Image 1: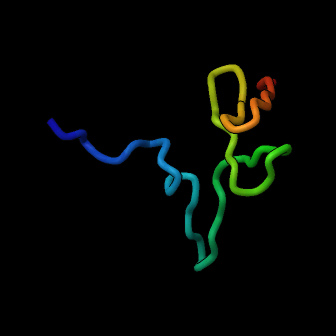
Image 2: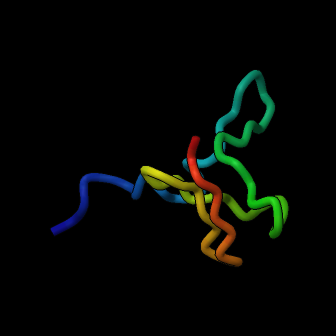
Amino acid sequence: MMSDGPKAGAKWSKYAVEDGNLVRKSEFCPQCGPGVFLASHADRKSCGRCGYTQKNE
């Protein structure tokens, strides 16, 4: 059985095009730099590459 569509967490879903410009919708990891997004959880944001974790306020 096939899924109903692409995964919501797919890399392409982190970007949008507005007025012909590329806009990044998610936050980058401050340690890894551009290109590595922080995963959004209910109580925190975390980096899957380096393990950086930031608590939500």
